[in-house]
Length: 437
Image: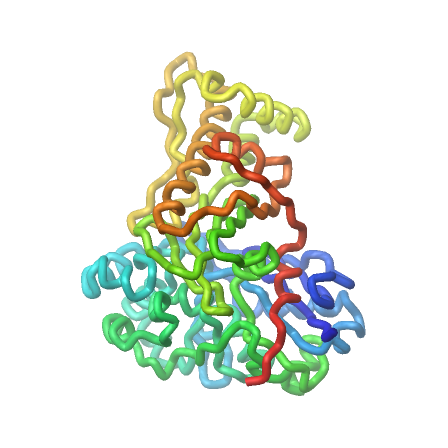
């Protein structure tokens, strides 16, 4: 069986691993890189991410060079424009960036809400669809984009660095807002014209498991790889996790961490305004996705603001106690859990407390945060069911430090069986059975 050098590239770190099938033979520690946050802008310096990739690979030693293939799973969207030599002209704009609200509204006005939804499976959500970022740069920094030779997401950028290829996969293409996602039919002439961009700037779309190029000699030296190593197109991190979870029609996969992602695998996409619909990246399947943008990050914000003098274990015991008590512990306070905005809204909501009185305590506020998140988690199930795909009762779950995943699923209606997975993204890469182009 062939071995794969897998790269799991998230919002703040890179993990490299050697896989044979879904078995991880060796894995690197997390190698971190920093996002730069300023107001609604969230960017990664383009040179820092390849450096983090190189450091993660180097920790595997010579075994990294001996792998048969390289495959990557990347955060998405992570938009970047490149010059003819593959150098980044812009920062890498991550899915947490919300600067392009005005541009998103303009795209929807030009294309039409229902038409955009019909073609792409999504509305042009800032942070969810990267065409809004492209529109922002066209409006605010057109001179920079006039130098662009290639525009894409993180996997396209890394491929250009590693192999010189100009490629992406259907899962990443779906999140550009320029791809005919529902029909998997390539770049949309209508949407490109509506944005005012040339399709010549866009990468070729290949299935995630296709060999898209080979490591160049210069890149081999930079990244600690073997020159000529075949590199697969790659895939979005959530899709890799779904592959490991089974990727069958009706399968649910729930990942809990700083954010909480609930994805439904389907062969029959039925876009909804409050969901993200995108290609799985392989086998002609799709995902319907609902994301809570701030979960663990909201809870630990409360610790920093209200319980900073408490030891961490005391704080954890407290929020578990409050979750067991339910709404009665909130003292009538209600929390709107949008502290990092929404992935499925153009105009971004913000988190808010309602019902505060002079009798409100910090315990009430913490309880309200938990109850708001629990309610939002449960509300996603009817949204996903409305797509027409029957939801299978066996749910794959990942993440969930501090058992937050169990807290969030407290009020799910119905009979469910939860199956924990570990290293789902990395192990999913092992299922990208390579195919020759």
